[in-house]
Image 1 (tube, rainbow, N blue to C red):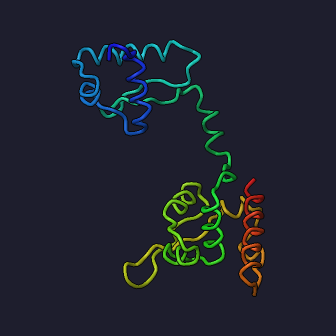
Image 2 (image 1 turned 120 degrees about the horizontal axis):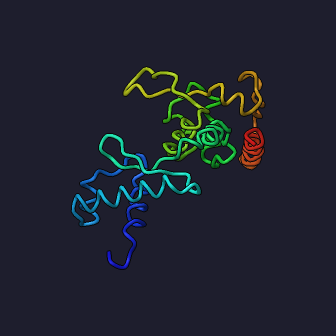
Length: 194
């Protein structure tokens, strides 16, 4: 550790731990330092963050764990970011999953996967975290899988008053047309999210 700055090491450890934070014991183990040494390091880092106006983060301790957190003075900006719609960055997989849910709701993850032909765990989690879909309950039958549907946020994002305003899907297409139709539909989804 002699060739590295211990403060930079602690900062990188705290950054990596995220919301989980690190206990004093974890820091002592990783740094192979005594309790007193780690406490002095943490006090120095806390003071540095507090004194530097050019820093947007601070060192906090909650429930016996050290974490990096944003300074309270920037809460208005953070709130703006959290409230700003950002679904324009949805992946193709998320857009496809969203389209299936929008047209087939209420629908289970298994049904979505049958339509798409691939696993949908990550896209469903992304859509849930963005507030574009929600759990509507449980289906009857074995395992009682979760049923998914769209939210008011979905309608707002696409400028729809209700689901009846979704674009019509062509009734009959051959495979080449289906691919092109799907691409056109996903393009309209992307535009609606921008």
